[in-house]
Image (cartoon, rainbow, N blue to C red; front, side):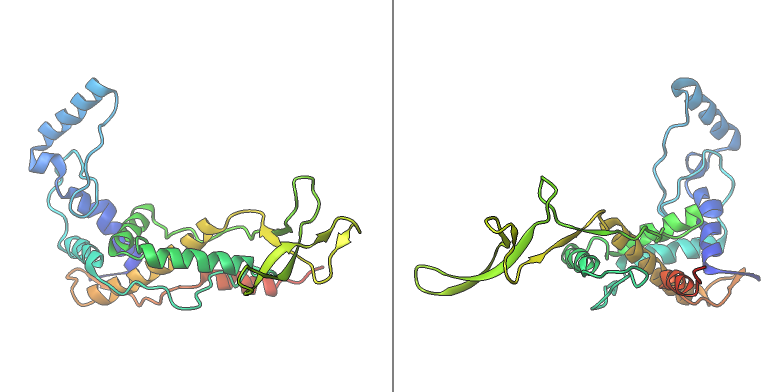
Length: 262
């Protein structure tokens, strides 16, 4: 029994074994498959694209035998993730403890994106999780969670001056009162009005970073599910212990806190 990690097992299955499924035009001889490759190159100048097999792997042109039994078990376990429920985002989820957010702008963006994903559910679907697992196995790494911390800046007008806001109470025709946000700058006195405030905005979007860190955690959850599913079903491999690394950015945060300025 070969001892391996769940990540290494997936990489082996999806890069070395599962591409054998459907290879060589469904099991044709090596010589015929080789001739097909040469014919494609002669006619098109390149090898044409091939459709993925049932495991999402691209079949090879040359038949190399059947995939290993453990690889097929792995492939089926990954496919089963598509029909598994339970991919949810916890309340209060905030994936940027390593970022300063003095004005709460990052938090607002996180809430916005999470609300959107809960309504659409495409990123929380089983098929998306399957794609994450297969992509990571083929690339040899998980989703990239690193991102540059965005800076915030004061909202300014087209002429470069700070924009000021103020809250005031107005009445409608029925006499009902409403609180509205209004211009907070007194143009006559050339100064902000009493109680006026400024607003800030992020210099760069963070949507991509939010989704990347969500993908990382979904991938880690999928690895845990697969580890539990496969550890007693393999015939030629035994899995090492797996502990999900759900917050690698926290290590980066701690490293920054432990750095001494000279």
